[in-house]
Every structure is written in C-alpha cells, then in structure tokens.
Length: 240
Image (cartoon, rainbow, N blue to C red; front, top):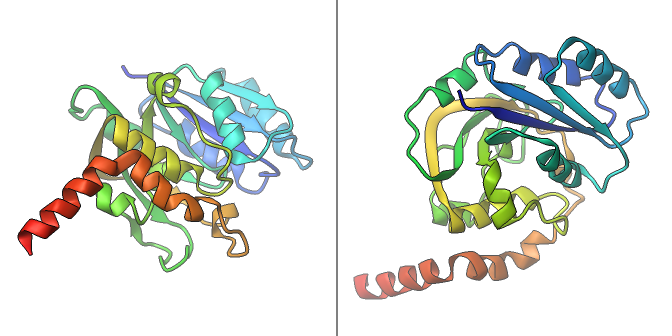
C-alpha cells in the first residue's frame, strides 16, 4: 500500500480539531500517518493532541513557535515519512471514510508529482457559496487566475527536495505559488472526486489582508510559464 502523511498545522484549534482528526482516523484505508505541527497553542489544543497521541501511535506531534501555517506545514514535511502528503486545516474534514481508498486504489499514471481532486465548501468563501464543489480540473490558464485548494491535493514527498517547500514570503497564498511551481516542473493528475470538506474561516478569508503574491503574479507567471505564454500568444496571432 501507498503511505499517506496528513499534515495539520494547529493554533488554538480546540473547537474543531477532534472532528478533523476523527475524519482521518475513520478512513477505511489504513496506511497513513498524521503529523500535527502546533504553534504553541494556549487553549486546550495541545491537551487534545496528547490524548490522541496516547491512543493512536501513527500520530506525530510537534509544538513550537512558528511564523504561521505555511511555516508549520514546512515543518510537517520534514516530520513526515509518507510517499504522498496532504495538507489539511484543523477545521477541515476528509470527505468520507472511503476517500483515501478511492484515490489510492485507482489507477494513477506513473511519474505524477501532484494528484488532486475537489473540495466541498463548508461555508461561504469569497464569491463561492457553502455546499459548492470547488473547482474541477485545472489547466495552466485556470491556475494563472485562481488556485487549487491544498486540501484537495496530494504532493509527492520526494519532490520537495528538488522543487522546494512553501515560500514564506506569501503568508496567505504560498500554496498558490507552490502549485504553479509544481505544475511547471512535474506531471499533475486530476481525479473527479471530492477529497475534503473545506472550512473557509482561516487567514485567507480575511479581506483586510492582501498577500504580496498579487503584486508578484506577473513575475511568477513569466518565471514558471514563460514558454507557454509565448506559445499561447503566437497561437492567438495566427488564429486571428
């Protein structure tokens, strides 16, 4: 079987963490580990994690000050040992008990570095509404204007050494930059199924924050997809 590492950053997550952990523990597919990276919570989060660690030996736990969720997720990469990594928020849920089974018993092409599906929204996120499925198959054009939810993505762990981890310059959208990087450097594969239930109450939903990625998008598009953009421009010229 293929081992999965589910990485969960936490900070004062006592209200939601149990449900998130239970959605993983209830999976029919059993070859997985859970890596929790806590940012020195001051509520009951650490107590909850310790209780789960006592009952489930496949849970790894680290608690120390960090620079935010993406820093914690980078630490989770180092802590993990699975072949595929899934980054789940502490208020997110795996869709149902058969999710991992459906994905990792499917026929996945060789040399895939990023494997993804969909999420279902638990609440309103921007223009998207609760209950909506987000967001189907992506091509480069679609990725250049919107992101894939990291809760729907499994990353090949071995590729982080080659392609790098989350760029902490982007406190809200580091996963978008990383998805561009992976799309440009490895093969990706879409499965038309729902991976997780996504709660949009995190930092990315707070309108007062503007991530630097929006200023950097023209540079990032050229950095990762220059030849594609040139090809698209030439193609449009000849087709007009």
